[in-house]
Image (cartoon, helix red, strand yellow):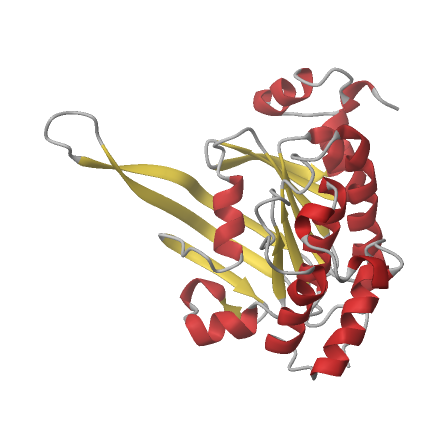
Length: 275
């Protein structure tokens, strides 16, 4: 039976990672050009750390997320999770890797199959990634629902996604990510599609789960306000490059890069003025 603590918690190290995409030009010749989405990015997520990757839309945040989870490969550079060379994994290795590294998606409405109950959605990773029996998986589903604040579990397990609120759906998405006892959670804009009234609860849940389970968290967002709530360290990304990094509180109170200043100035009550 799976425990409540994280599984293999390893450092995640990106070294000189670049990702280029081929794009078709609009001229009559339809020539293809290269677009650099991520440009020579290096950073480390230490075991148990919570790191924010912050930037405006198109800055390369989500591309980095997909490369860390193995959904895309970098054009150059390396990504390693402990001894695992993520950048060179193939299907069999990716399956095993996804037991240790899981993703929470931005859209809780599109992330869940509308035909599957909550119980079925959570049972699949328990059976497929952990090899639990049907009885063990059922018990695990009950535990996961309780852990993400969907209690009593017997009330939520038989529900379909359309019977849940947006906040409840995102809690199910988080529970699914936790099902395999990962060491690293990559949360890509996990509250951006939720009502403002629901965001604080989901952010608190992520912070509590990270602390109680001892896992690492990469929190990807354009929202500097939420970054301070859940992370210790921050990296600011602009046009695919890291332009500033450091302790979250320090960077937000005393930014040194003009782009970070611009992001802070776009917030009605920036943390730079907070105590």
